[in-house]
Image (cartoon, rainbow, N blue to C red):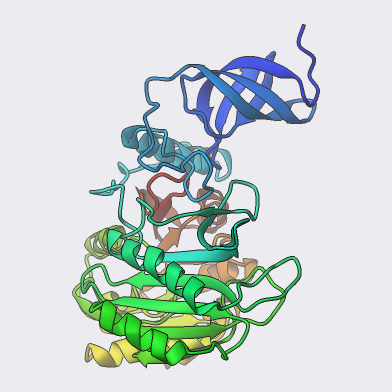
Length: 455
């Protein structure tokens, strides 16, 4: 009889997927989570972590593949930690994400009767990411590496292309890596905290094709950088600019607080929802442009705006949703804690000639209770929320229940915290009319969704 202890080997059939993307099987009434497996797989796994009722296994062999198992499009999919589900058919990925949202609404939110719309699928689940952030390292042979971390480690899987990134970035990845090698710029070592270059960051405007290249370094002083950047600008006609971000700290954060541009301009221009946007190296912008546009269109269609409404966009960032809303309403107010993002949002509003809009810098928890005063005594008709993965702070939910706008639109990248917050809002008198999931991150377990509440 197989013992339930670390190191033991067992056979099981995978019957589902967890919210983190791992395959889920059962062995003698215990749940076993096994990465790199898909439903229907009959596998052999070694237990690497055990508790009385559940464990975690390492896949040793797929004895019989499930019907939804496919050959991954990436040659390093079994090593790279960037994608979890390249071995799973896209249709099965979508089904799993719908299930993940519904399970969270039922289990965490306590909702028994929710209108969950079919997930908005990506037209192409490959070549979709408009941003690539590659950590840099050095191989055993002394050559420069760039890629993504191996699963569960900080060991870099060296790449020259990536099938989920916009393929216009691939030439830059391979060639810029070689140029860094030629220049002899020292690569940062996170163990000894020596060296200079930490990351290579590439962004592309999906609609415009403009590319922005940023080097993250511990110092501004990279020898011969101006000449090399000028050569890149000449070599790549789509390159809008080359920037350096300075991050001297011993931290896992990618970017430091300061960025300078070397050649060209410090931003790329993108077209989004019929508007022009400037996007800078450290700007937050959804990595799947087309899917974000679909969700914006869904929000606008649902609200059936009449052109007179007052709208508050909380956690507004650079105005990705604020600006499209402002074109359809009487007035729009954006709330954002990052002053730099508000500067860019204001710049984007001016770029598009949108004047019925303003932005306030501060935390949403601080600003939302004062919204009526900020609006000169007006009550907002609609409040849009797009908080980070941890969801809304308690003060934000309390302020919403006090303000009582007719409509609340809640965008979320975390079904569990969304369900938790919806439970409190609906307990305070709101009705959850529908939830629309969207696939912003094909080949991963992440799912975006938007919930619509009415007072």
